[in-house]
Length: 400
Image (cartoon, rainbow, N blue to C red; front, top):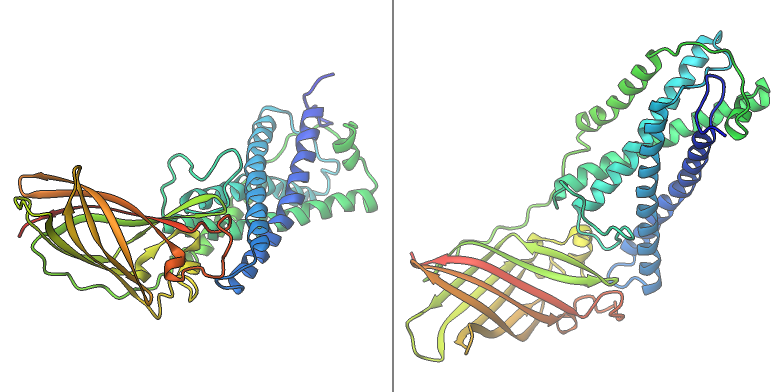
């Protein structure tokens, strides 16, 4: 039995790919809407969503994303197979407008099958989330971790989904018309491979119309500002006067949500550093770091992290770490107090230090317990949100 199409019928492989695609789409669309509704319920619950609600939301998003990648793979195979195969002739070529519309919708549907899962995948890869694609994870080659890229891809994904739904409804409506009104062999060609129609040469105009119609979607998104990233501006901290001036550096945290690490960074922080590398005393200096909490970017959970039951960034816009710098047998340690929200908790930060030509390079990590600062107090299950939060710092500093 040949797998190939003929001028009058679809082969077994084309039919199998068609129905597999249909099954994936009919699963993905409701999954996406249900997952989004659960995400809204999580947001509405504030800091203390039920563990079962969070787990269900993460599972549905992971399932949706995983099936979306599967649809993308199937769509590529189907597209390649279509380009290599003979396209069966339309059954009613004398109905020119109907034939034109049917072929334009068919091609627009093919574009949707690639564009929708691809933009969803790019959005997922560009963000730091907690619902991984099973078997693949979070990253995608050539896609940077970028809030702007994630926002643009998410916006296009949402618009493309509605284009997919529209073309799908038109496609289904046409199939029902052929089955119930025309009573012709359209469905039989796709279910049993029944030959029907008269061989003819296909026009390229429906394809051109479908591509032009699709091009209007990103143009519309650009013209209406939907692709513009709306950000809130956090107060900028004044530069601190210091014996050592920070030139470059990163200050980050890593939380673990539903067993998945989520890493973020504070983009606005200052440090006052006094340090004597030639001292022989146990205490070599001191450090006073002020951090702007609203400057934290924590991937897809940034907004939730700023809420009143987590960092409560509106009420407590800054955190402060004051410590003495002690020498150790290997490296140094900053021993002091971390003041966050209305809690002041002892904290030690071991770090390595390299001095070269008057430039100090520092790298250190430590861990603290979020419960000490009443962060996420309503999330009591560590499987939902782990208690430990990793803090990391890297910087270079010079003496003025």
